[in-house]
Length: 314
Image 1 (cartoon, rainbow, N blue to C red):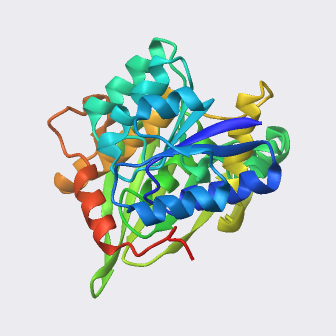
Image 2: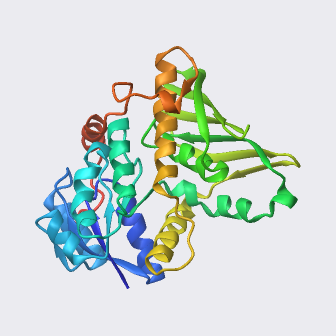
């Protein structure tokens, strides 16, 4: 049984992941460390719900207790601090999406990976069963992928990164430039579109939506036909947890290497930089540390203020 340590139960993901693990019996949460906005009652509720062994008083204590850390905090600017004790002990860490939100932290993640540290992540949409099924079709049957169109909705980055990662999972690495295409708006709700060009000639268009949850919908045009499907959000956590368990058990898996995870974040950073420049194409290689980024602490503050109890004792 894989022993999992939970760090900061900010979102619904710890509950969703825990339910999947409870059903599959390949892994389980054994401990939790929380220094985020969930109060003691919610932490105790989480402990009781999944029968955890203990609430740890430090990240180091949790890292000693488990085989792998799951970072669920929604302040992505705090992810590297939380990951450090696990990585220092040679243990893998899964960082829930978004991995990080700025170029400086991206470079730190890549440097850690270059040192042999194991960082897994980040979006469940990248590993969706529907994506796996598409990729399992032999290329001679489905044709070479030419363009992918994808949608996601709730907010620009915390949720929008799902579709960037999903497209990265389909096309693989090689994104070169991103161009902001424009916005459609109704009242305070709006959708924005971005065009991504790839080194191999492929392209992608992704839409984010702010103000309303939207499903993950993919249209994939190949040299032979067009595939169109909506991802079943009820199966996303299972698809991700399955791959993490495969990795931990030494079995074949499809978890993306760090370079592909960070490329998806670079796509999002280039997207916001292009928007700031009125739609000029921005090359991923030209991103700078003083360019536009996504503020994890600000998102954490807003999310915490708006979030009701999720784990309180019933």
